[in-house]
Length: 278
Ligand SMILES: [Zn+2]
Image 1 (tube, protein in one colour):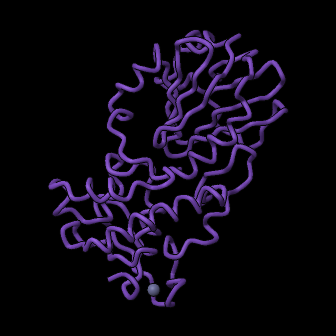
Image 2 (cartoon, helix red, strand yellow):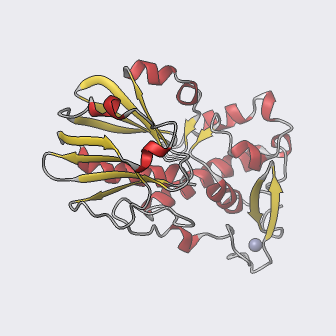
């Protein structure tokens, strides 16, 4: 599943579309097999002739803004991806859902293999900002500088005290943009045992964690994201994040060569080094 850094990389690539006027936009024939898209082509056709003004990221969501009030909320889900090309044939677009062609000839295709992605039209930006998953987003993990004090203040809220830190990191209400990969990597970098509850963490550990989250997510963006499963950049290329992972899906710790432990917490897998993280 794309996490914050992968979504940020896609957002950066999509900036190529800013200022482009839409010549054609339509839901594909393939998309009509799915309830969430079925019969909605006219709603999307509304954007024909409109100019793309902004593509902004909120956590793992994109908001597409045009020279009109209506906006599109877009989530990549598990396997959603935008591919950009100057050719109609895009070899990675095996499960295309939405097709856009701009006046200057750029083709953008929203591809989604497992179909957990979202493309939803809202009447205006304020409606989106009131939409609970957007309204309740926590600190943007990619914010620079990372707001360490705010992170610690939120982490100290009673509701987190007895929860294991690995599970808390996945709550988008605390920090938006951390998924399974960067959860394991941030905890390894900060040398924290993922099974510790928040109340067992020292102030020093919380500070280290804040720093590690920021460093890990920023490094991932610089690497073009991590191509573990289906994630590719809009150019079709793989990201390089997986090349520096220290624990995620690794056998041995990159730091001390101990055997990596794989555990399940709250139905999600965590990788950690029992020697470095305690
Ligand atoms: Zn180690």
